[in-house]
Image 1 (cartoon, rainbow, N blue to C red):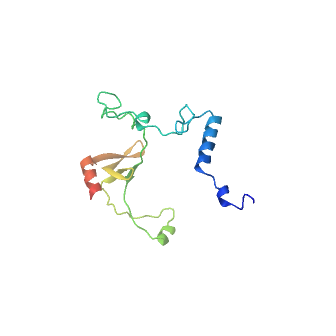
Image 2 (cartoon, one colour; image 1 turned 90 degrees about the horizontal axis):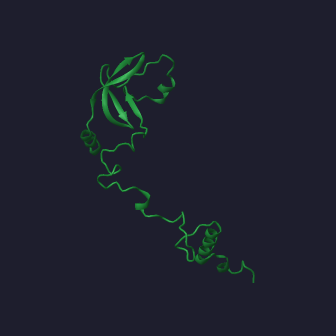
Image 3 (cartoon, rainbow, N blue to C red; image 1 turned 60 degrees about the vertical axis):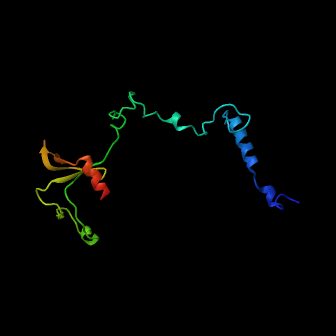
Length: 152
């Protein structure tokens, strides 16, 4: 009778996997407390969250201070100033050429929207400084107004 005659003999049991994992860990110098006979800690073993992350709930520590923004100050965000929008058919889009004019829904002199990561945070007007365009903020949306817009 060959090995292929009995399908149960070809299947690998959980004990075989455990033995193979233990053998691999021992050969790599790694150990796992879940595997008997091994003393060192495995890098693959899950650690409690208290060992991975600092405790932000402790008052009086620098990392626990609610006014400590240092950890987020270098996160990049996308700032967009929106002049206006329009919908256009692909047929008309393909006909655009150098010098074409696209009519926008925004009116001349109307404040432009300032968005951060797609969320409206302010409105402003165009200014020119040293031959470069800029925007002067004229109205900043309060956090309460932003939350109110998210709910509706």
